[in-house]
Each structure stands twice: as C-alpha cells, then as structure tokens.
Length: 410
Image (cartoon, rainbow, N blue to C red; front, side, top):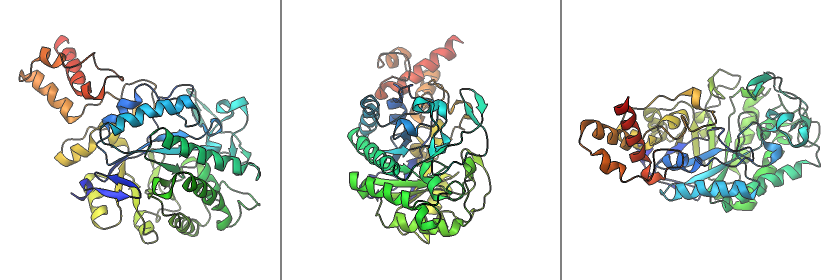
C-alpha cells in the first residue's frame, strides 16, 4: 500500500505517508503551556510518518481562544520539549504549526483587552463562542504598515523557538481565515497600501513571512497550510483562481518541505460548498510540482489512490486520529476504526484525549477477559493506574488493566 511507504519531504524523512493533521484540542494552561498529558497524546500517534502539532501561537497577540499553546516563552518551550522528546523516543517526526489568529481573536483574549489585529477593520460575519457563551466577533484594528515587520519577526522567532524545543520543522498556518489568509483574500483585506489591492500586493505579507522563516531555519524544514475553498470565518475572494494560482507560484519559489492543502468541502470542522470548490489537490498538482499533502475526509483507499496517481505525496488525517491513535497500524492491518467523539474534541480534561486504545491495548484487554493473560502479572508491569501522565511504554497495559477492573467490578 503506497500510503505506508516511506517518503522524503525536504529534510523530513517520513517512514510512511500517514500524516497527523494539526488538531486544536484546547488542553493548554492559562500560560499557553502544553498540558502534562500532551507528551503521551503525541507519543501515542508517533507511528504516523509525520505529526503536525496543534496550532502554536507565535505571540500573546496571536492567541485566538482559551487553552491554546504558544511558542514565545521559556516555559512554553519546556512544555514542547517534553512533547518532542516523547515523539522522538518512538522514532517519530513532529513539526510545529505556527499560528497567528488575526481577527479571529477577541479583546478578552488580548493583552490589555485591546482589539485584535488584522489587515483591515472587518469583523468575521458571525458570532463566536467564548467562555461558554456566544459573543459578537470583534472588529479588528488594522495593522499599520510600520507594525508588519514586527509580526513577521514574531513568525521567525517562533520558528527558531520551535527548533530549539526539538521540533523537526514548522508549518505556517496560512489557512482557515487566520492572519496570513486574511492578508491574501480581498474579503478580509481592503488595504490600499503595498499589502492590499492587487493580488501581488496581497501576497506580500506571505512572501515576507516565508522569507523570514526560511532564512531562520531553512526551506527544507519549512512548510505551509492553505485552504483556498474554505469559507470558514467569512473568508472569500473575488478572483480566487487568479489569487491561488499566484499563491502557488509564490510558495513554489521557496523550495519548501511541503505544501499542505485543505480540500474543498471543509469549513472548520463542517461540510460546505464554496465559490472556489474547483481548487482541490488535483488543481494544485497541475500548478505545483513540489511535495504536496492534502487533508479532507480521506480514507485509506482514497489516500492510496491519490498517492498512486501522483497527485499527493502524503495524506493528512484529522478526526480519525483523535479516536485511533495508532491509525497507521490500523491501516496496515485493515483493522476496525473507532468513530471520533466530537463532544470531547475541545474539552479541558483527558477524556477523549489520551484514553482511546490502540490495537495492542484492545488485545491486552481481550486476553485479560479470556483468561489468556494474568491480571496480576500484567499489573506488575505498570507503575500506576492509567492517566494522562502514564509513561508511554506502560500506557497500553495500564489502559487494559484499568478497563478490565472496571468491567469486572461493574
């Protein structure tokens, strides 16, 4: 199966072509430090050829919600070091997704309660959830042309911080209506200076960020994600095919590790149709000859077909990875896939985060239930009942023993 074959993307040597898509899980601390359970969560998924981390905000200004992690303080970097160490101990690769949420933030989330920044003073056209209630989306403050170099430097600093924290590279978040995307599309960019108006001007911020990040860590460890057809967070453009043709030309000139495309039909976590549904991975491949990853409701079969056809070099999976931590192994064994539980995607605890079993954990439980394996002997191999801080080499046994005892004691 082509999906399980190795591939090289820039300086990243993947052992298979199954990629963990960036998944916001909202488990970080108030100081934007990854949770104590994050090392286990990512280590459980290290059989993937590549892990793309949840979005890590590049600055306090870039924060767009509660419980999001960051990459601008020493404490945050130490939290991420525990994650990257855990992934590397299992032979995995992990890149950090660098995120500035732009107008998708809110004054309640900004230092000093100020308005979030964006290319123009245009709010997202719908209310948002914040602290358990719906509130109007904020009208952002347009970045002054003299401020933009500071934001560009923030991206470069975050990239260097990611490498210092042990990441193998970075992926710029240029999708889903966040800051880079806001500069690109004229539905959110009404500027009249050198960063607005023409398609060429609207790609300037992207070019400057790519220049700075590539100069900081190298093109072979830099990637970007885009979502041309998504209307999430009120995104749209008047000439999408002209815009995204030029965006692909810009990105192609940098020799990045890969381009990550969100397929049409995806808007955040929902289905939709849009003004740019023709801009899919096949459209991109015809214009972009470099490494290409796509995400969007792929199955093992459709992903293999896309790789076999030459359209894609690897395929990213999101929701399936939430409930199947060993997704690549399940694909290899053609095993049953557990359906995801949307109610646990963004909760603050470990439920639905690190407590989904692997095939190995399920088999241990079956052996306990059938009497093939002795409970006391298996329990002697673990240091404590299962939790988010269980050592990775114990988690399958700890999960199985905990589940067995719960079933036995009823």
